[in-house]
Length: 608
Ligand SMILES: [Zn+2]
Image 1 (cartoon, rainbow, N blue to C red):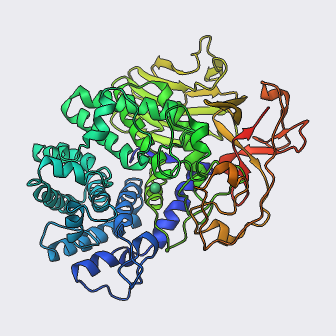
Image 2: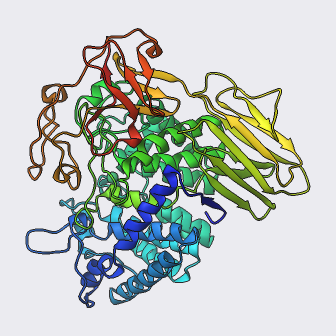
Image 3: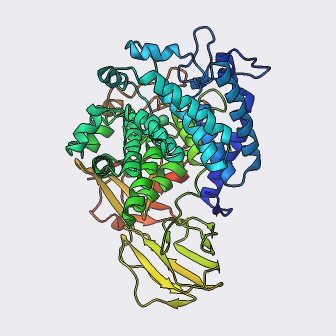
């Protein structure tokens, strides 16, 4: 995180800065409000946050309160690692104040709600997800220690973990398995990380109490029993399994992770790489069209965040370029496309329902789970562009950035306007005196091996799509590697309905721009559900309306007739990355989904 910087002028840099701005606007004392109130400490003149952070206030309160503060610490730690001193100072203050709350609560427990909520969990009474929220706070503390060296955060985390140990230790195994029916986030992953950091196996044993066998066992037998499960409850459990494998070498966990990943990526992901509908996996594997019709709430953003995290684990075990084809697909279409320009507000679902529009959180009255994973995501966009091993580096993502690998003396600058441009240029500004391997990811979506030049001379050999081009030489200051990645228009069909099709240009998912008529701020900022939808009968009863949102007129969703090759009837238009259908009853302009805001759109079309 400290060795890679994004360069200004790209989609990624903008997203990073919009998110930084949103995070900076949230006052520390507002984020701390519910923690202080819960600990009986003065809240001062701070105004509490609303939405899922709402404190006790008559009828309105949120049982998830405090979760966002944890995400916020993780995001701040990442910003700090990236050189943001203000974010660091603010988060240090928050850690110190949270430590005071923890002391006031007895020196171990720390949350924005009372510990009696865990007793409700044990008694099987209704409660939202207390361990989920605890996990966010613990993960925030871990990141503040791991990325910024805040020792107090490690102390707070160890004390919280001791509380978790004390609470879970006496529970019979059957009781714990019942408790795990309620979402508990990635608490085991944080405990495994703590075990690794402190070299204390106690924390790994506490983490093991959070292994939900009814979920993990079928995966171990390579059975996809994901239908009906809440997606973002379970993806973090697989991340925990990945971490369990990494700290123990126990290959059972490795195999569970691999099978799960292949099922979700290969059989349960839409063209954007997003997974889930109405937060669940609603259909059997490879029945995506059937699932897609059940609700407008496809592809929860937290799932995208966590699948990227899981991908990083798998890639570190076996660096296949295909992992980064998926990663890029998600980053470009889902992640970059779900942060609102300037304000930095983010989405809950990236809906793929025809005629939908993007909706975003409010400034301080929302705080969905995805608002939390969002502030984390966009504060770490410098992550995973480059990977390293003993031989050299992998260039996995085409994002304007500077790398300074201090341990090996390699510095390079990646310049590109990708995906607007198909040219990528790597400029070496410092290099070690011995040979070093530079591996360039050759995307699987290319139709043939790309042209690569070193210092202006075209290489005679290249590498096939879906692999790496390995360049092993003594690099010198001033060396320049250039690569061209020609994009093509192509189609992706639903596995269970080949007439339902999405169109892509290279890695970019295209959306039909259906206009912004009738959309107001009230439709765009605040609601997390699409309302007043056309095709309600097609999409069934799950397309429910939020009663706070004004109605909006139905629009006609065009259908297409065309030959199998989309290039014969979808033609480039005047602007870059823009296309237009031809010969249809109603023609449509297609642009990258990630560039459409405040417009109604369609990604999946009925094509005959
Ligand atoms: Zn979420």
